[in-house]
Amino acid sequence: MITSSSSRQIKNISLLLKKAKERKKQGLFVVEGMKMLREAPCDWVQKVYLAERIQGSEDANALLELYDCEVVSDQVFDAAADTRTPQGVLALVKIPVYPLDALLQGEDTLLLVLESIQDPGNLGTMLRTGEGAGITGILMNQTTADLFSPKTIRSTMGSIYRVPYYIAEDLPEVLLALKQRRIRLCAADLRGAVCYDTLDYTAGGNAFLIGNEGNGLTRGLSELSDVRVRIPMEGRVESLNAAISASLLMYEALRQKRQTDCGGAYEDLV
Image (tube, rainbow, N blue to C red; front, side, top):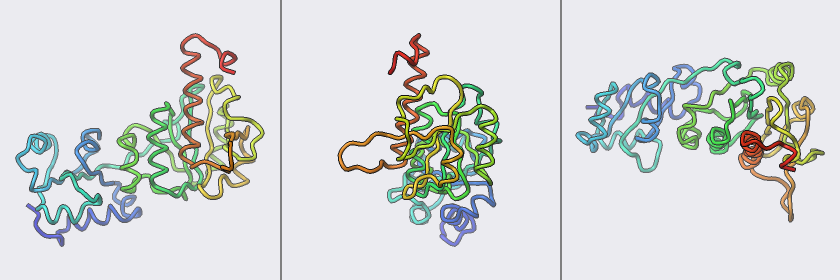
């Protein structure tokens, strides 16, 4: 049993929780709670830590049969955990790496492209919502918040295990490559000339471009798009939260797909 906060393993957990650079170096991130651990692919889980208070429980015994587990005293465990009310389960999980092609499914491609999203909660929510809306992947630039930070991981509610991602060193270059593959780039832009729900998203692949929470898309990225779409606003509201905007776009694409799958046509929707 680990009983000291100066333990090498506990110090390493702290590093992985706090430093993106360390997560990247080790290829590991931290998940907390039984739900997040149960949803993780077994071969991704490297090590599990259990608080002493849950030792002997049905859940703990099941984990002991599956994984390399270490018991930690309650005081040390609670101090090491990132959540306010730790559930007594913490695991080190391998960071998956995907090639760009893993995000592409030909004419069925539906991507969320993020430029410099800063809020980890927004990022995690977009990933979770994206899974619900059926996106094939999430593409982001290097100045977007860390996908594997504790807050982002919690916000994904398990979608981190199922939605492929790609972090582009040169996002404009990757977008040009997508255009060559006939994937239409739809930029969310307050000045867009086209209302987002008047486009047909059923005829080929699409990618929705979402910009920074405060500044939106940079001019260069917006100009790369094939079409700039706007979300209509009533009252004095100037813009929506980035995650809300992304959700509206993704679910409009899903709505149209479901309609056509049921025998309707896009023309029936407008």
